[in-house]
Length: 88
Image (cartoon, rainbow, N blue to C red; front, side, top):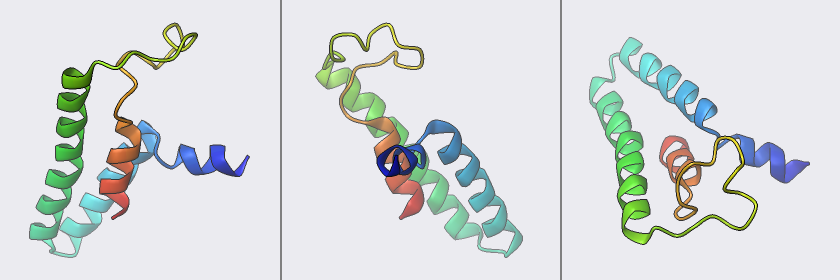
């Protein structure tokens, strides 16, 4: 249960919601440079993930291809990289 809850912190919706809230707070407290750096970090992590998935094309494990929400190759973990960029 703990691992599933921890993994949910890296879900796409949590990362998007957290990123929007973080940017809004940074802008409201007049930390525009930090807001831009944050957007570049989180957005850049998505670009890096997409490029790496294109270069590696590692297939998903058997049985995961039909699962809803899994449409790209399995490596690297996009939600992990995006969550790391957001939380750090």
